[in-house]
Image (cartoon, rainbow, N blue to C red; front, side, top):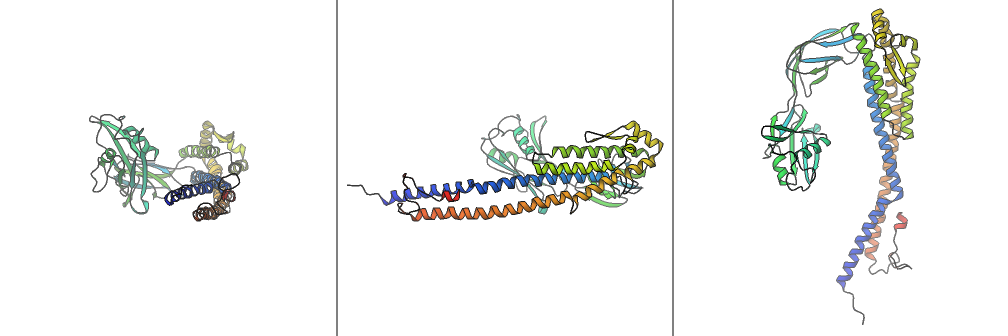
Length: 443
């Protein structure tokens, strides 16, 4: 007599089969060739967009360097007396004049330290997986960074390295009492730190910090803004670098006290400004080379930009540039400082016209060409728009395909559940005694 199959055994087997079908359907969804192809294209275009973004930043930095030397600014210089600030020319908005800057407080970041330990390399706690979350600031400017600690990096040195790898300013410091973890936030009063720890109790006790938290970190320095006055006008800044306090001049605060900042025209400034322009061009050339990825479209774009910059040099008088010490070799500019100094001594105004004259000078032409490429209708801007449009199209296709495949996998699971013992034509046994499925459709 055939033994009856119990209802419980059948239910268990059916549930197990349903789970396997659901898992297989999900796997088929993830491995669908069409979906994988779209994801590959999205990855490619995402890399292209990233490359265009880096290119735009590099071009903008070069344009800034070139633009500040246009007009009659090639022989302009910014200087500062005393030790409170240093000053440098930022752009063509700078005008000759003198400004009084008094610094009463420097900006600083909050600094937290742990209690001292005897060994910076000794494992801390059990080694169980632990997440350290560091929150900075509040409101729209708030940021959060999470660091994972586990066996292998659960030492002071390991924790500090993991934090640095995550972009945090962390290090191990030593004093007479032992080794401690030091964590410093971004400068500015709004950038206070909060540290929460989930996982190992030992790390929670050592590293937690925040309002109402009894943690192991203690504050050594508070977050604060810089405070200063420029020509009697009070200013605050979250950083020690200010680019808008004096038009066309960048200030770096280095100490409390008073300094006189002067913007003046002087032939002696020409050499430094020419060096900066040559250095900025060569830096851009190196960045363009570094952005090459082997992707044909990306590298063609970089080649076109390099050619555009080369055209600016070709349009200038090679002989005139060579006479003031500027030549080109292997794509880079080469500066002969002896020839440059001789040209400055002989006729500084002629040199200023050659390099800085509005519209026709080399710096002005560089600035105009880069602006043209970055503006709407320019090559870089148009390329970014084309790639972004393709990304949007692919993203929509991916969403649509994923929805279709998800519905198919859900239908398979539902049909399997309704098939009972296998009487369904969909999930019955095939000729080789294996269950048939919709996977061929999904593949």
